[in-house]
Image 1: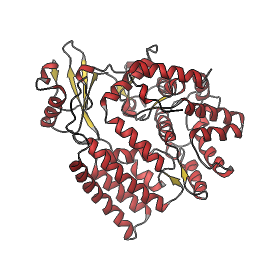
Image 2 (image 1 turned 30 degrees about the vertical axis):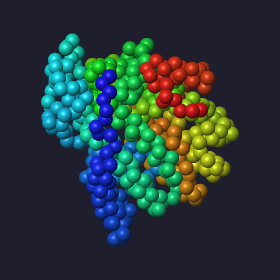
Image 3 (image 1 turned 45 degrees about the vertical axis):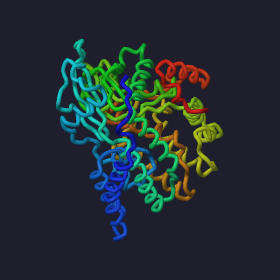
Image 4 (image 1 turned 90 degrees about the horizontal axis):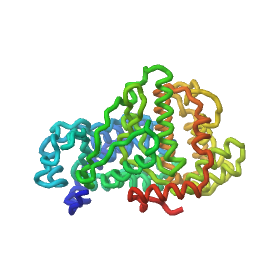
Amino acid sequence: MTDKIDPERNRITARIGRVASVGANISGAVGARMMGADQQALARAVRQALGRSKGPLMKVAQLLSTIPDLLPQAYAEEFRKLQAQAPAMGWPFVQRRMRAELGENWESKFASFEREAAAAASLGQVHRATAHDGRALACKLQYPDMASAVEADLGQLKTLLGLFKSMDGSIDSSEAILEVGDRLREELDYARELKHMRLFADIFADEPRIKTPEPLEELSSKRLLTMTWLEGRGLMHWLDAPQDTRNRIAELLFKAWWGPMTHYGVIHGDPHLGNYALTENAERLHLLDFGCVRIFPPRFLDGVVGLYRGLRAGDMDQVAHAYEVWGFKNLNAELIEALTMWARFIYGPMLDDRVRTIADNVPPAEYGRREAMEVRKRLKTLGPVLIPREFVFMDRAAIGLGAAFLHLRAEMNFAQMFSESIEGFTTEALAQRQAEAVKRVGLADAISQP
């Protein structure tokens, strides 16, 4: 893998410029509050300001909107409307990026390279290419000065969440900000994403129905990731497919998310519908993006499985212990009750041993709304509740996966699938599997301390 001195490290001039630009947009929105705007109007103004800012902050705002109870309801609803798509940068940028990462003769390293981007998002864009051996390739190029933009935007994020805390003191988001920051910085490191890709390939080596791209290390760097192009149709293509096809897709999604989680302590933290594709007849699932991957310490999975078992057995001592393992502080009966209300919603389909939809006939627009509002109402009476950082992406990813099941209108026995996934679970066995897998792909430093 090419590894040069980084000319685009966190530059102070780029960072100052980004702070000024984003700060002006947000300040204008916050000024609306000073003029007496109601919360819905202010939420709309902040969302519009974030939309003008583009880049990492918009991506983070979208992410925060999917984490239950972290934002006031009005802001969560508005932030979900943000679109991550961005206009692609032109050929001069592509030439500069490719030259910086692969050298002056970079074009000779490909049989062909398309000038127009195949896709573009908030952090980078993807171009199709062809290898000399004929393989179709995807080249993911990072936009310039993204490290500076991330650091600047994380500072603005703290300001924004401080505003929310002044309005609604039910959530202490300080740990969540640290978690989001760490994951976003990792997402800028394409060398790390390459290892994430290999980790998932290793996990699913014996599962022919789930496939990951093959990275090309010699054509990759920290800001360029070259991989094989996997053809397939996105999830939205299959929404009107026959029921058995939609059920098969849901089963593959469940296996692709919960399998790594319960066997290796690894999750894909961004289960966006666009990160999956399926081959003809939906026989094989392709996983397409590995920027946001969380590797948990084994003790955290002890809490995940322990909470499920406690809820199933009605053992509130075991339930409370799971919250302690996750890192919730100052637990008392009221806080445990509020947290358990949300836990019963998240785990509900996996506690109900029958074929059902994920929402069980609740309209998609209302799914989880009543529970989230009631939990927030209860938390307000308890003072700021610190959300443990490891909890953030697990909860967010679980909600994202549930949204995919909602779109598919899948009818499954989720309880049976989850029970099979944790059969024989022990923290010791998971720790051993995890340690061996991350060592094989060069990610041993990613394991948090237990």
